[in-house]
Image (cartoon, rainbow, N blue to C red; front, side):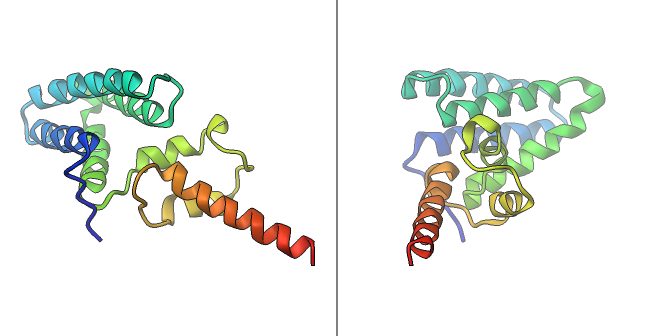
Length: 152
């Protein structure tokens, strides 16, 4: 299912970043540098937009920025394939692997880490908005079902 969210500024940031990373992978290293610059701008924009450096969208952009920086040395530029493919998946299908990974960090979850959580995190369908919001709805439903079963 396509999830083209052209009315959302974040979608445009990700589209531009995906294009720049593709240009870099096709041989023009300037694409990588511009993608890093755009991501740093996007990070600052979302810090101001949310008003909180700990906000989930800011965390996702921070770790994405870190991945781009780690991939910068020429000997590891093959790593740029990961954010390039992932960013295209975000732009076209709304599936953000980075957001899903960030949601697993201890301060972003209130349930214990498990294989079941990993499966749910990476194999569930994309949701509109934050992956955390989609999981929160599922957690609330699970808690309610658990509560109902306990009180029978």
